[in-house]
Length: 227
Image (cartoon, rainbow, N blue to C red):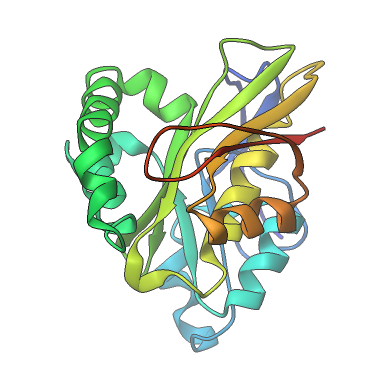
C-alpha cells in the first residue's frame, strides 16, 4: 500500500490520518470523514470509481458490508441539501401514516437544527450512501459523556430495508461513539411498534434494560444499552 498521511485531531480527541492516495485497502484503520466500505459485487476494474480518495472503514463494518453485497459510503451531512434528513425519516417511517402525523414536526426540527449547525451535524451524525444515493442516516447526542452517549434518529429508506444496511449503519455509529475516552455506555430508546429496530439493536450487541409505558400509538418505550 502507498498512503500519504496527514495527521489531524478531531473532536473525538484521537489522532487519525487523512488518506490521500490509496493503492489498495489492506487492513488500515482510517479517518471518520474519509470512510468507505467496499463490498464485492462490482467489477474490480471499477473499484476506483467508488474509492476516489476515501478509505475503508473498521473491520467490523467492512465485514457487515461485504455480507450486504453492495458498496456503502458514510458521508458528511454538510454535503447534502437541507431537508434531506427529514425526507429520509419520512420515507423510512412511511409504513404507518401515524408516524408522520405524530413525528413529522420533530423530524423537521431535527433537520433544521443540523443544517443550521453543520459543525455539530458532521461530528455527531452521518448519511449513508449507496451508489450515490442517500439511503439512511445516523445521529447521536454526546452531551452526557463520559457517563453515556445516546443514539438519536437513525433510519434506512423504505426500499432499502431488509438488506442489512441498517445494521451496517448502526455498527458504524457505535464504532465512532466508542472512540470517546472513558465512555461508560451507549444507550438508545425505541418503541414497541418498531420490531425491526429492536432486532437490529440486539444483533449489534445492545441489551434490553427496561420497558416504559407510553400513551402514544407506537407502543411502550424500550430502553437499550451497549457497554
